[in-house]
Length: 281
Image (cartoon, rainbow, N blue to C red; front, top):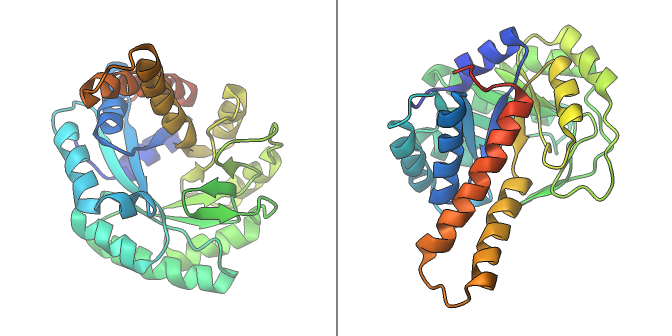
């Protein structure tokens, strides 16, 4: 069933677990993520970035998710990840997205508040949850690039939430987008400090490549939504390459698409168990 992220994230916050949010690039990845959620009886969020939406329209991605979600028994949300501006946020709202992120973290504090509130106000009027970001998540994911040295300030986070009206907040504690070149050092104490003054669900970006224990520790300290993107792409591509290497005569996209889909499903099931969302639908 297609739902907004509001109830699933609130339940996660109350229950001490997190909802996995998985970036999808094609039909097979959509099928894989929702199949994993069905098998584990888990709530789930599927995401597309602003860059992904240059490849295909919000309407096309929404149509894929809606078709599969409506046949599922678990709650499914489609979320705009790292919405870069008001325009793309509104396009996704009009297409039917059930959760929106506006990312003004690359701007100065006051400008971040202004652009975030502008989108949050429209989302609120339409009954759609809105995620903001304060502090920078390092690395690069699609067109999103930032240095990883700006941790979220707890008091600024409190003010940001109060002034923007966002319903969830992505925070910077030392994670990075993309592939980690070394083991990240997370400032989990900072996460606890933010949790003390911010009462809405907190979001962890850049979780691909983190150890299971690191993710669990973040959840224990208040994270309610965990984003996974890079490792899904890696799993899908590796499976496709394996088919083409072992059977180079293969020309039917369904053959290697099926392999990619199964690889993503297995990975997503693993991540759902780490987030402890299995059995929570």
